[in-house]
Image (tube, rainbow, N blue to C red; front, side, top):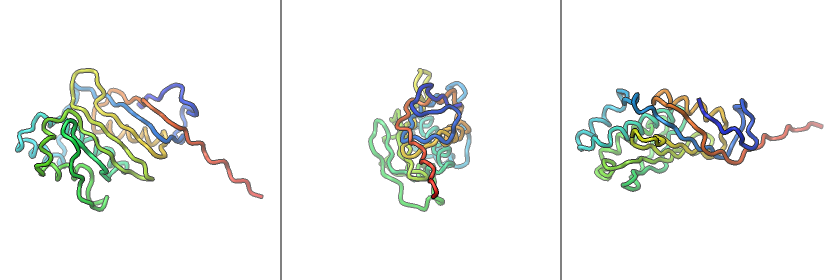
Length: 199
């Protein structure tokens, strides 16, 4: 499902173990088929939005929550930064054990704070999450429109394998009807360590 560039230095097609320092992805959602899935965890989010009369942001925040659910399933649970665009930086969630609170739970809790009123006018929502092995994930989710624009952009930094990228996209595809996932940037292949010679 992931479209990798044909000519990436050091990239060998079919090897899921190839490692990179950075991988950028653009995900296109099939707008006609996008219907926010009724998920029990997202119910408080929808009711909060209606209470605050920010229905305009419902698609944006529901899609953000669906992406958060997907990335949390592969270990991206710690929120390092998030912001509404326009609107600016938003308060970080309170520290919690990663097994007790996922990004969606933090998002639902945070929306009860008046500081989040700017989300109602937002066109994009951006977040940086930390994951396993000190890999960071930058996410930008855009409102669903019929224009040809990427709905979700992902940027992974750290030690990333091709296989982990494909697993991440597969998880998101379980939440959103993706048309395509394209690798837009791949940087710095990390050479495999040479075998240790025994004397």
